[in-house]
Length: 246
Image 1 (tube, rainbow, N blue to C red):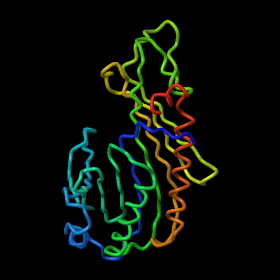
Image 2 (image 1 turned 90 degrees about the vertical axis):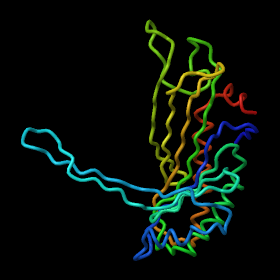
Image 3 (image 1 turned 120 degrees about the vertical axis):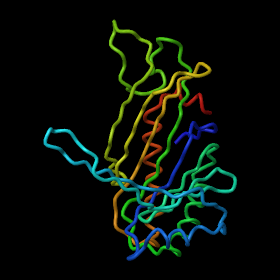
Image 4 (image 1 turned 90 degrees about the horizontal axis):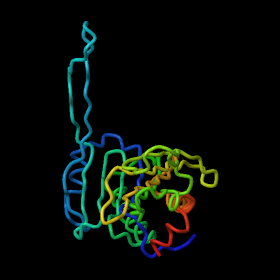
């Protein structure tokens, strides 16, 4: 794969979902990670909510109940370059800009995953993923086709206005080489700035599994998923796009 010295990555993450240990609750998780003893500090809780609706005789819905439950903690590294989510059912580490390299991200994830396992003792790993969000910032003139930089992006029919202000295209793909799924999203939802279109290329590569948290297969799978992500990225952008990031 071609190396991009100025890759357009705005966020890269490693995500591991688990079956939690029996009896694990938010208070135990909070006590496990609230101490700033591993280079991260608590930013706040992660909550999940639900809203229950009751259908009335007139066919209108009436809110009957809502509830928010604390399911994890959001932590930041002291330099604000990493965001760690420790949840009852999983672990996510995000690297913000500037992205360094895969080895650095994976080693930091490995260090923090060890802490997560020591302190929360998850039973099984059920899903492994890596996700990369890119802002391509394409230097397009008015009416110039996005296909100059993005392969097979749906183009506009002739005879309609050619100035694009928003689009969304998503594919969910099966990658036989890793036995996993790649969700590939290409979208534009903001106006261009400084003559560049902020086209987002979001690649989420994941597998479902059932392995022990200490199984080395976790890291082997992540390496393979990263390769699947790279195939998706380099298969989506053109040579002209790659020239922007080298």
